[in-house]
Image (tube, rainbow, N blue to C red; front, side):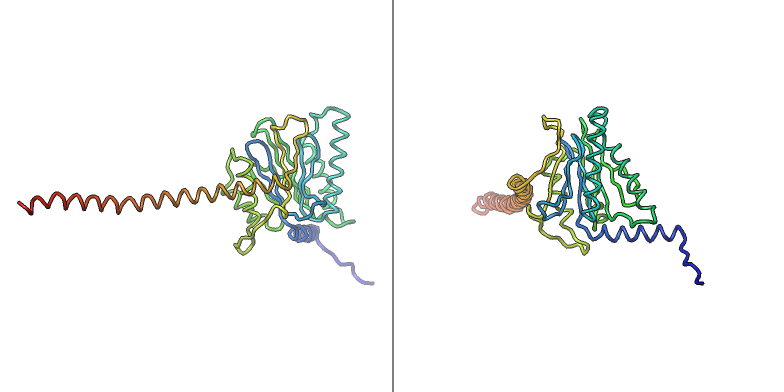
Length: 276
């Protein structure tokens, strides 16, 4: 009779976590940023049908990376939870914190269960408030823990490098165009430090806009509107660069003219002296 193979609980959990992280790392990243009028979601996703960013409820949205069928099941479950709670109690009782707790319990149960593999997903749940300080962003890794994020957050294959880039450049009070440009710039950077060009067709962009008059604040930015925002951001950068170059050129050209005038003036003053 053979002896059963023993694996310590700590090693089993470490192996399951490594398995989930490898699956998540194969997915393209998603970036979520706060801006002055709400929260913007930017994902590298060329598909027009399989969304990484979706609406959950009036002021709540969901973003995910990893296996599509797994996070789609979680999204559907979140919509059902929000609809039932809003119908049973009140729409104001549906919050991102409550939804994040439900997702955390689900992911934690699956991760610790030896009967099934852990979900290869990482989630972001965000809620827009009446003011920027009331916005809420929660990140939920594969093991069911909850991380309260502020300002910016990234999940996916290159999340650490992207998060570091965002932390250095994100600031309060950014416009939608500025936040979108920062998000696209961060997603364009690869592991080797190089940069790619991401077009509107390769991006999935949505916002939770607190200024919308209707109750539902979620809005997708598609097609021409997204292209215009990207072009305006690129044009603003070129204008700033041109203005900086013009200022440098003006300063440089002014110096020789001043020297020439001073030289001419000196000669004119010295000429009468020589004649005398």
